[in-house]
Every structure is written in structure tokens, then in C-alpha cells.
Image 1: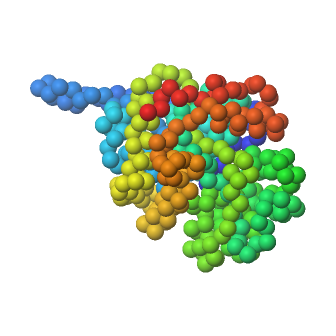
Image 2 (image 1 turned 90 degrees about the horizontal axis):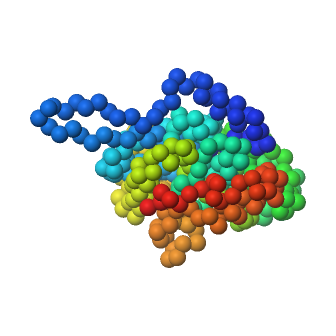
Length: 346
């Protein structure tokens, strides 16, 4: 599960970006491969390099990327796409800001806060229409509503925006244990409550011998972020046709991974992350399908993928309003026009 940058730490965001910039010997930019063809053959078209910073190690949430890659659709579009694995301390927005990567992935509240702090980013598409973050509980835990969390202890990222949202909407304050991205404590303690991605952690809970957990879905509380794609803003302006081609291939990858034969993408995910098993890949993909994350939980008919990869100004307006109400962003500092664009969507 990804880890966004801390809140209220604008100077830290800038410091991290500066540190990354200094440590990078040379930012990785789109390059033209040398022409190795003979004089008798026409030169092969140059491929544009695009580096994508994932939010976590390759797993089925990245299925659209890896299906498109395995099918050859990025290369067919003239793109040489590289995926950088993520993790708990990836700092994806900062890396994209200084062009160590060109495109990144994160929940949209994370990137909205980064843009508000001045990072040169712009949302260009969606991974999931609905961010799959949940509070994970044992099936027999008496907590059934967000209001029942009063005084409870929760393992979560301390900077998770849902925590102040929970307090403001329900008057619920919880004791927070910093997230360690493991499930051992959850398995051992029937009263344990933990933030997670319900498309990943529950599988490992069950493999560890515990019954299937239950969830409090944050979108049921009205906290409904995208899992978003964002790009370096100047790079996006400079490479509009390539970005448009990338998003078209990515959308095709998602549709094929969900509706077609996922085997090419699953094989690519196993090659990129040897910890992936066939069982986990199939389980996680099915969870993505069951909750209609790619096309949207409110898509009609259910399971329709016509909105795959798409983003909407109205959704961003609501998210910005929430951040303003929580006091995390000054009113008017960011608007849908300054944080997103639909210009490159297929």
C-alpha cells in the first residue's frame, strides 16, 4: 500500500524534492536510441522514453500498465515505457517533480496537497475511479460503523487525510499506530484495526491463518478519492502527443486485463515482482473487478469500462473543497483548472 508525503510540511516536501534532485546524477529524460540500422535499411522510428513511478511493488493494481506492456501496445505507439517499483518511502510526487520519472501514481488527495505546496504536477488520468483504501477489522469485531471507532486504536499512516476527515465528520478521534505495512499484528490480535487496500492485505491475512476480514470502506463515509495518474507539468506540455498515446494504450491495457485474457499481464507482473503468485494475482484481479474500480462503482451498466482512466473536474472540485474544510489547503489556492487536465485522455 502506498505512502504519501506528510501533511502540513511544505518545507519538507521541498527539501525532499531538492535532495532527490541533488542525488540524481542526471535526471532521466526521453531519449532517442542510437541508429543501428544499415545504410540499406530505413532507420527505425525513434521511441520516446517514458518512466512511470509506481506507488507500490508491481501487483494487479498495476495490471493495466503491464498488460499494455506485454501486448506491445506502448511500443506500437512509439513509446519505450519503464516502470519503477514503489514502496513505503517512494516519494513519487517529488520524483516526478524533478523528472526522475515523468508519470506517477498516488491517491489524489496526496497529489492535491503536493500541488498546493508548489510541486509542478498535473493530474492526467486515473488508475482507479475509486481509491480502495479501507479500515480492516476482524469479522467478529463489534465495530460496524465509523461512529463506533471512538477511542479505538488504528494502525494507519499518520498523514492519511481520512483521519482528520473522520474527526470532522463524525467527531471521532482514534489513537494512531504508524503503519508498518505488515499484517502480523492484525492476525495476532482480534481487536486490531488497520488501514489497508482491500485488494491486497486481506489476502495475506487469510494466508496467515485468520478468517476473511470485514471492512469499513472510506468511500461510504463520503471520502472518495481517485487512485490517480499525475505527470510533471512542463513535461506534459512538451510531450502532449506521447502522453496521449500512453494513456490510450494504458486504457486499452485495463480493458484487456479486465475483460480479456489477463495472462500476458499476469506473467509480466510475476517477472517484475517474483513475490507474486498465480493465486494472489487471480485473487486481487477479481477484487478489482468485483468493486468495479477501473470503470467506477457507479458505472452503468455495472462493469462498464467506458470511463477507464478518465478524470472529471467535478470530482476534483469536491476533493479540493474537503481539503479546504479540513484546513489542509488555503481556500482558492488550487482549483480543478490548476490541478488537472483532460486534454490527453483517449
